[in-house]
Length: 240
Image 1: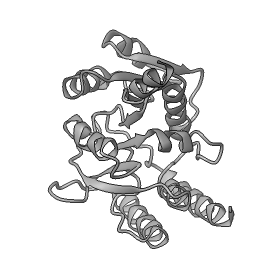
Image 2: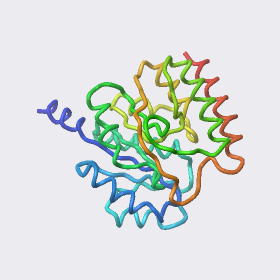
Image 3: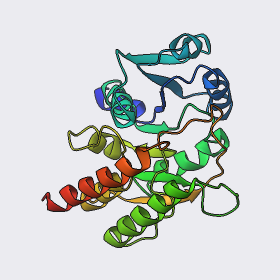
Image 4: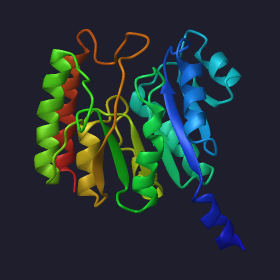
């Protein structure tokens, strides 16, 4: 009886939405997600927002996990992963709360991991149709670290910064480890997954401009991002 319960729990799907000051779009994002996968639970990880993100997410019917202050994108994802493990979820779908990720692709990403094709399915805005245009510095970073991660993993990677992903239970467990980066979990995580023997691949999706007009890669952040990613990749290669 206990085994049957565990197997049934491992079919459950959790949708994790990290959010920092997303009071404007968050309710609409939750509503659209629910239309695509009504059986999944939605968890918004409120990363120390100073606006009404928490209030509006709760009003839209999502479970909200709130950090006392802003702790970073990677920490927010890990909060969601740890919640998934604790509550017996077999799959996690992660997407941003700013309206950039089109929820219509959630079932497609989920199918990749449910069918056992990969451990992580990554939504790429640069495969197939779509005219997404990233800012110049971010585009340079994507190409550079996509090339590095691709060479190290033996496959083509077009969108190493995509936070639109589906994860299997095995991948969720791996991403709760201390080595998971707390700020920018991008190309360095793909390298970590490959070195740990987990499978991943990109799936074509469409994305929209952020509804709030903000980006975690704005201002001087792209320069820090490049420095941080070089350091993180180097440390990953030194680990056994």
